Image 1 (tube, rainbow, N blue to C red):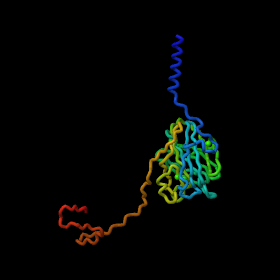
Image 2: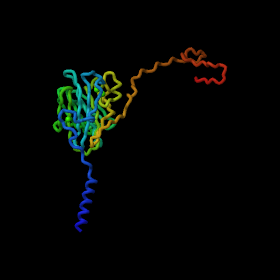
Image 3: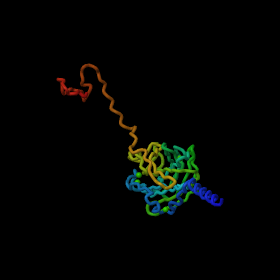
Image 4: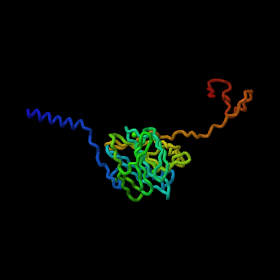
Length: 280
Ligand SMILES: [Ca+2]
Ligand SMILES: [Ca+2]
Ligand SMILES: [Ca+2]
Ligand SMILES: [Ca+2]
């Protein structure tokens, strides 16, 4: 009888071990302003692809998630005294309903408008040139609630380096993010100097202005085991709606005179017939 009880006990323990969810990977990075603990998981953006030159350049961006905290890191240059530009991260907790569109007043008094039609936006992170930062949660109706006091952040030296962690209370298996050097809105556009991952519609602009709300389509993705991948939904810019209008065609009069057809007017090179196919 004792043996049977022991066997039952062992089996129960084994079943318990198999059925419980795998433990999340805790403290995969330490928030200390040094990104060496990110290894390959912090992504490098080109050092020369900002629309606004080397003093508004995104250099590195990282997203990690351990089931309880979202970790964000960035290395960048934010230039110009008194400018509106910030290091921006738009975060989508997959399975949590945020807002597809956000329109809000961020740091430096700038209005920002973004749209994620591939998912939604649940968390916004902004860091300004002077290392002031704000983090908001976004409700389904687009309302922002500041949660900066729940966030741990540390800064490195040299180019600006930020590393922060944001606690998550929901059960989430996957998190997506897009990173930017973002200005404000103006002239019907949301102004962005640089993105990671790059967004082809932004690549195609000459000045970084995207019709507001600026649409983001490509993301860094991290699961609760810390596996980092990328989701690239767009590789080519959307064909521009501002193509020059085709020249109006001249009126053609049916009068037996073909000169009003312009060139090319089809003339058979094989007037005698035969096998030559007339492609006109
Ligand atoms: Ca670190
Ligand atoms: Ca860059
Ligand atoms: Ca979401
Ligand atoms: Ca970029």
